[in-house]
Length: 477
Image (cartoon, rainbow, N blue to C red; front, top):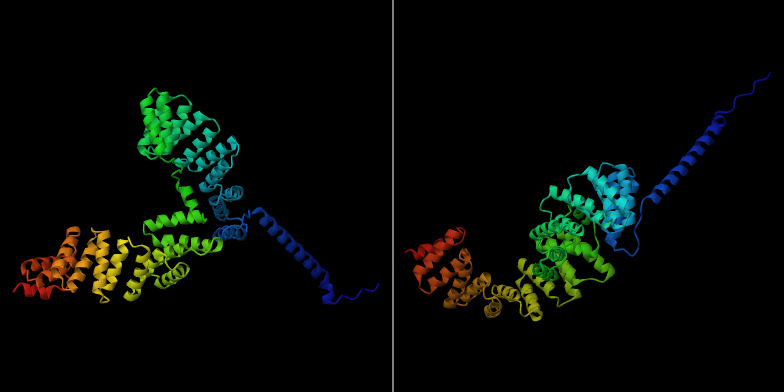
């Protein structure tokens, strides 16, 4: 029997190559199907109508989940971004994904409970979710307060009282928990208990209109109509307080990049001089304004103010130039641009801008004062004195203004008037070394050496770096 000759090597391996190719094709199809399935499982709430910063925040969080689908923190971040923007169905889905991957993380369990409560889920589900969250963080009072509120909505009043009492055991000064307890006790006809809780809530937060209104009802039912009327009158004057002091939810709100949220946060930071924190929200606001409503000179001016405080003068100047291009008479933009020019030593430009601002805001003492401060060094003493006089008519009790005015009067050799203004400045700020120095100089030129010596000595004591040595030596001879 003859034996067949062996196949050439290339032909011998051909069937295995085809099998490998088939396997590769199958794996690719599986991978594509798996990726498609994952993409479908990850919520995608982005719509073209959303503002660009909102779209970016949501898309970025979703991409992080797609890149790391087993990461609980990625799912949780997506949930929080959706939650912060009130996209509750998507937030619920993402919280469930996060909790499945990190079942011991309180934020995901708590976030899911809050969202389902907001969605009006069934009573048993909501209370069960809050119980699960509290199992992970039993000493977090806001969660117990929210559980109490949820139980009230379900009509489970005795259990709600227990939840409020547990919150107060953790934080005895939790005004909203006292309020909830008082309202619930009143619903249970426990009028003395309701009064005690509501009066404590009022002590802790006398600004809450809801507490005042509930207290009025309790007092009426307690047979105290006069006090009830007083409480009702207070309630009409007060705003209701609904915000829960909840650090976990407050942190989540920082993810909200809608115009309203950005503006609120920016204004809070601006009021406290927290310019680094204000800047990103101001930049988002400006971007959204340009995209949705049109360029806004007021927003550019606010951003410029933050940039100046952060030392980014070139960028600030560009923002102010654009603001003034949009609105040439915008007072805040003119003022900020003038201040920036003044800080850079361009007093002529600063004076021009301040003049333009005073035309639009002639009752601003600040603008007249700053205009005078620019005109004096430029050699326009009459203009400076007129500006200072106008400012003083609007704000007479301004130590800086009186000091600058006195200095300008001294330069105009009107030393008696200069002394009067400088004494006024020192009456407001007794430890102003510069005002003592200027007053000493004018007194010396008026021949009042003893008084001049006193003020020079005081200036030297307050600020040893001031050039007082020569004058002191002369006056002591």
